[in-house]
Structures are given as C-alpha cells and as structure tokens.
Image (cartoon, rainbow, N blue to C red; front, side, top):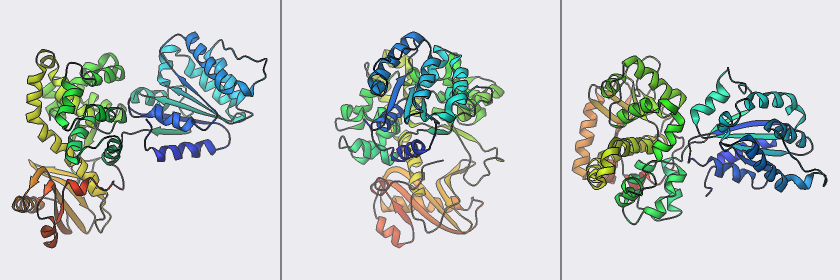
Length: 469
C-alpha cells in the first residue's frame, strides 16, 4: 500500500528530468516503505525492477532476463533475445540500451550483492565510469541495512564511493502522518493511537497491522501483536537487527536493552551491561553514527559539541518498545506470556508518557509562537527536568507535558512547579509558561491568564512544520 511520500516522489522526478545518467541511492530501515515508493515511481516510466536475492548469480540473471523480456523487448529487434553470462554483461547492456531512451533500473536490497558477488561493486564502478556519459540511465540502488549501505557508498575505501548523485534516506512517518495513515483504514480514538504509536512508531508496515488487530482497545491490539504465542511482531526486532549487526549483535542488543530500561549515560550502560566504559563508548558511537539506532541528546541550553551532559535514547519507537517489553522478557514470554503482559500493563502508561513528551516537542515546533526559536527541546539538570523549552535571544517558552487528564487545579500546580524550575535555567528573556496534557480542564481560563494550554485534541490536529532533527 502506497501512502504519502510526495516529497520523495518529487525529488525522484527531479532527478529523472536531468539529462544523462544518474545514480540514486534510497536507504532506510526494513518496513519503512522503500519498495512501495520505487514501484510507485516506476508505475508510469520505462523501468526495470530487480530484487537482489541472496542466491546464485546465474539464478538472478535468469530472473532479470525475464523482467527485461517482459518490459523492454518491444524496443529490441525481434531476433535479439538478451542472454547474460554475468551481472556485468547485464549492466553493460542496460547502459547501452539507455543511449536511445530514458530507462530506470532499480536494484532492491542492493547490499546483497556483497554476498552474491563481492567483485560486482568494482565492476559496476568501472562500467559506470566508462558508459554513464553516453547513456541515459537512472540507476536506483535500494538498501535496508543502514550501516551496510553507508559503508558501500560513503566509505572512501569502497569502489562505489563518490559515484552516487543523490542519497535519500527514507524515514518513518511522523506522528501526524501515522495517525492519518491509520485513520484512512480504521477509526482509532486519539488516546488509543498515541498508545499504539508508542509501540509501532511510524513504520508503515507495522501500522498496517492496526486495522487487523485493533478491536476497540489498544492493549488488546498490543497483546495480539507482541505478546501472544502467534504474535507477528514478537520476533521482529531479532530478525531485523541480527542481520544488521552481524555476529556481534549480542553486544549491540545489550546496550539497546539497557537504554530502553532507562540506563542512558555511558557510565550507567557500562554498569548495567558489565562492559568496560571504553567498549561501551565504541558501541555507542557505532549505534549512533553508523547504524543510527541511538540518538545522542544534550540539554537544549547546552552546546552539543562541548557539553558532557550527554544521554542516549533509542531513536525508533518500535525498537524502544520491543527491547523494553519483549526482548527484556524473552524467557518469561515463553513460559508465561499472561504474567509478562500484566506487568507490561502496569508499566505502559509511564512509557507512553515519554512518547507523548517527544510528540509534544514536535507539536511545539509546529506552533506559531510569535517568534522563531533558535532551539526546541528538553532540558534537565541535577534531577530537575523541563519537558519542552523553546527560546531565542528575547523569548523563553517552557512547557510541562503530562499523559494525564488534568483538572484546572492540577494544571495550576504543574505551572507553579514549572515557574520554580525556570529559575534554574541559564536563559534570559521574557518567559512564558504552558502545559500540554492528555485532557485539560479550563484551557480557556488558563489562556486568559497568559498561559499556553493544550491537550491531545489540540496536538492531534496540526502537523508540525518541521520534524525532529
């Protein structure tokens, strides 16, 4: 099912309009919708779609020859039946064919060539350098394993380094697009959707399970998706990440599990996992910069390059949930899934609360605040925390975020606490205070008193002007 992605399609159309040959790489996590996107792009163009299965080269060539015969044989002399003895011959043929007409060629799961024929990357580099100037080929490499794709195309030691014209990372849907996507198929109340989003994130493939499993309650859907004996997503994290990390996956898993449980500084992770601090630092760097499964965070008032106040969080809602509630309970899930689920029910509201705070940051980014913030994010210091801070040189806006239904009296207490914490901030300017709750009584009255007051009904409506960095 194809949905949204208009910006990406426009980018592909722009590249397609360029004269001559172009090499485009599309990468992103499995289930993010890369294949649906490229097939949508190919739908009205002369193009070939090749899936790179981990099989013998001869078998791939047999598959690819059938695709060529079906799609472009009408452009060839009737006596010519393309037959290829190698992948290099096939690519050379396609480059030559495109001299006369524009052709799009997609290699899906491109990184699998490393298993099928490692020398192919060098051969492709040679062919591309030799023939691209006289061809009219749009070559699209699609990859699911972020670390491997970055190594193939961004490592200076690799043959394809510097050959790519456009590199596009396909990201999961944001919260608002995810809600629209699900609501286009099934009616889900906003409260239930926030809970489902806390577990599934914005991955289109996972969100497609909602119409099947949602029967009027988010907890029932999550039981069926993650905890039941036949749950389709129970093994998903293991299946995806073992291939991404390779034989060292256990160390990566240990760190991701620790972070999901709230051990977020290098020292805390080292103590939890038993790994040496230096080793933890190496894996944190890989998981953040290479694989992109962790996100490095600093207080919004700090210089990210100079501060030591660094914490880490899992950048993907799905994996954060999976490590926290599934992987952490693997043995118990096999023995007594009902008991695991009961413990999950007790812990889940606090977990959703953290997700709601991240949603609130993007919500504030999309608001017309009357000024253009230099930065928007979270702040913490010695046990004190402010959920959302937005500021420029003259204005400081602070929000507390609560995944609770607040009475007017409760909201006033929250705002009073926020005013106290504001005195700890190293920011100068005109301060304004706000609260974002699940449901908030007396929003109008608070507004008349000069506070900003929102609840989920407000949050769910707009889409942010810009996503989280």
